[in-house]
Image (cartoon, rainbow, N blue to C red; front, side, top):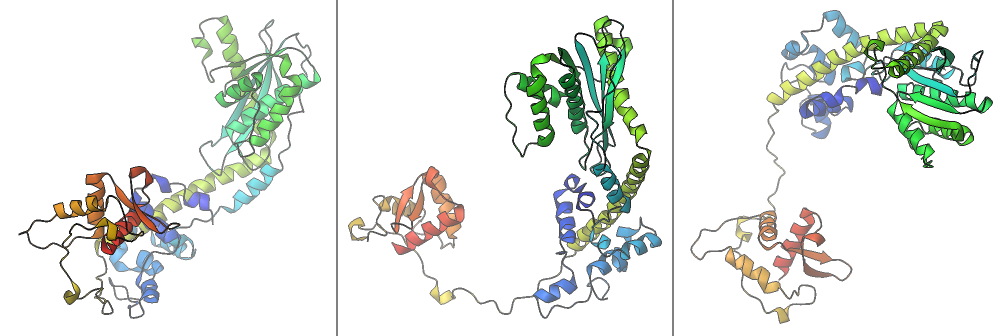
Amino acid sequence: MSPGLTTLNLRKMEPEQQALLRAALNGTFYTADRLEHRNGNQSTKCRFCNAEDSQTHRRWLCPYFQQCRQHLAEEQVTAVLELPAANHGWIPEPPCLLVFRTQCMQIPDETRHVAWPQNLEEELHFFTDGSCLAPTSSTGRLASWGVVLGSISDDKFEPVGNGLVPGWTQTAARAEIYAVIAALEVVARVPRPFYLWVDNDRVFRKLRLFQRGMTRITSNQKDADLWLRLLVLFQRVGHYMQSVVKVVSHQNLEGAQDEGERWVFAGNAAADRTANAAFCRFPNLMQTWAEVYRDVAHVGILRDQVQNVIVAVGQKSVLHPVEKEQDSHGIARISEDEIQLFTPHLVDVSTLSRRWSLPEANQVVEWLMALTEPNSPTRMLSWFQLNILFEHQTQLGISYKPSSKRYFLADARDRKNFVRRANNFSRWVQGV
């Protein structure tokens, strides 16, 4: 099963739909067969059709919920039933995905395999770019990088190197970093002043930070392995870098305002073509990627259809909740004879023990007395109601310090959680 593919669209759902689907995925979607384990006298029959209830029955077999799965053909329902995890919402991982990831781990690092131009100018202008197939897919991405060397004298752009991103993690961002690494590898072998023309904002900002001496990279930073490698190279050849320039990618040459801008657009386009050309050098991997892309799309359709059924069945079940049986074992906490009318009155603070003594004790009592009227009918209030009213009107609260075993008044900054504050208020009033 694939957790990533299963939960891909989970956050796009409404909160109620998310809750129903999460309950199905973790096995807590309550049907009669599950409730029987919680309540020994619970019937295991489906309350909608009187057959034996289960998650499988309710979603895929119960005639009452036929409308929830009417968008599926019978053979599709049969296919889901043959995959036990699928009828709970878990989606199978395409078999070719493991093959694809294995091949990605075997991609060679070609950043040092460069093609030397016939004539190297005194100043080098590197255009770098990264490319990615299916960039929005969490499982089917495949990235490549490319570097070209631009010439100011003859307006040519010669490919220096390209390749695919090695490893399991395939992103356009990693491809962009690999392209810059390849460019710096050239300078490390042929030291001379150079310019970098990049179209990735992350790479541009990181190189500017390196120029200013800000080289801190944490191990939990995204793509930290490549940033560290780039930093080591920059520390070797960074003093040759004249400038790093951020360019806008995929610009039409016809829209250039002058020859300089046209040259920059052409260089970026050449780097993009060089990066895309790397895919052609790996035909076997490209064939596997095409299979993964197709199968992930099919699995996505299956996921959406199955999860729509699960959510629809859950919502329809909630519209007709099970009637709760009267709890015959419930015993009232107090009897009617034990109920007494509470009438607050002022206290002599000097007679209170150290545990209950508060200099402001009568301030709390006076507040309680202000709530009562001589001829008004008796009302029952919870301690939660009284405490929230006390805090709202006085901006104070009663706190308890276990180390000294004493109660004291505290302002809003010293308050703990509300339940604890209500308990403290209740115990102090009853104790006094």
